Length: 248
Figure 1 (spheres, helix red, strand yellow):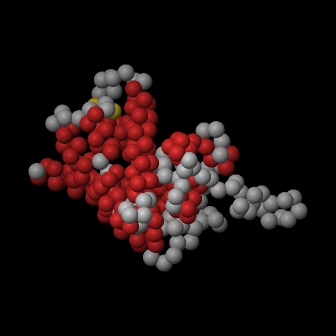
Figure 2 (cartoon, rainbow, N blue to C red):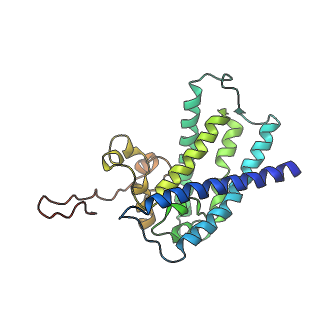
Figure 3 (cartoon, rainbow, N blue to C red):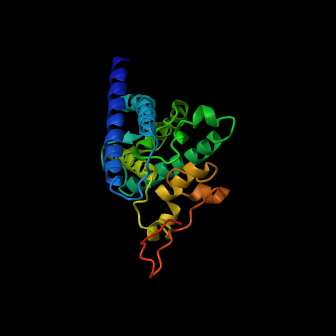
């Protein structure tokens, strides 16, 4: 039990520091943009409070799996030669696809009017989210989604290095998707590859409309279920108005 508590405390700190470092960096970069969001007073404090509390919720199942891994009770492995090298990218994509499907349906369920206030209202206090909103979940919501990756680690083999890379990627994309401005070129966001991925343009619309765009990584389930939406592309200024790019 003492080992579990130490692991839990360490993982809580690691998750919190990873969140703070990533969010603070992206927030600082966004502040240089003229189209950056201007959060209302107290918004960032609210996002920080929920995010740091959620760090402990995420740390608990992770600590349980980490202790199980030490005892040989998971499908995590550390030897690069234990499985074929082609399994490394396959396992990463498989984890992302399963997590995305789970989140789409849980997220959509949490938007039901009888559940919203208990599971998801805290996150949507950020109508114009900042980078600090990336982990700003109600504790009930965090408890519903924090177990997915740990459970997958019990069932589907994945190299520990690939898993760590996925966790870093998930933190970065969640932060970028909440930072309030689009970092990717519009030709990518609306192109044949980027058009299937969730970016700040897609997720920002969710914070304004609520009833569209429930996915986490990909737009597949939104498109299949008719909940996908995108704002019109930015309208460029005409040759004679000299105003530069304008929002639609």
